[in-house]
Length: 172
Image 1: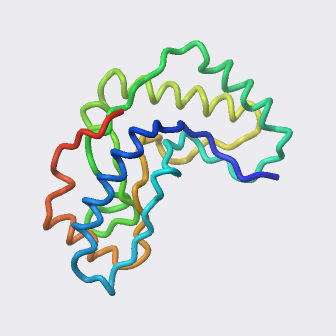
Image 2 (image 1 turned 180 degrees about the vertical axis):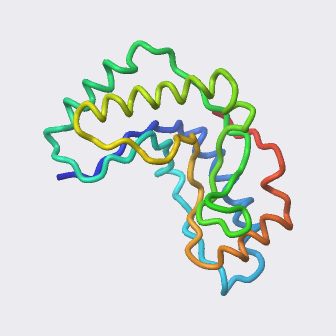
């Protein structure tokens, strides 16, 4: 058994840009209340765009899964996802995850719809092999950090700095 997920790997250049964004964000949210905030920052080398978490799988199921996914999306043109904003899950005033992703306008546009269609085809391919569909709608994002303690303090620091309202241009 292996713990598996489907993901898009990032270029070294993009990872370097994301490391800069992380450092700036770290300075803004960790400068105050140091003892009351604990954040786990994702190492840039481990950053990826998760398409689907699969969980524990038998290694023999990987090749059939890859074949089903290739058949479902192999002929579709690729989509470039612009990283234009910082965001927070679950709530902005008390975040658990800090992320970077596309703008809301992009998500609602044609390219965003294509990403959702590709994700739907991948979900169908996985479902045809007995894997469960994701309950939450797909939202393309890269996790920068996980807030372990002091979510309200982090939310206040984000609100004060206005960083979540500022446009960002990291790459795609």
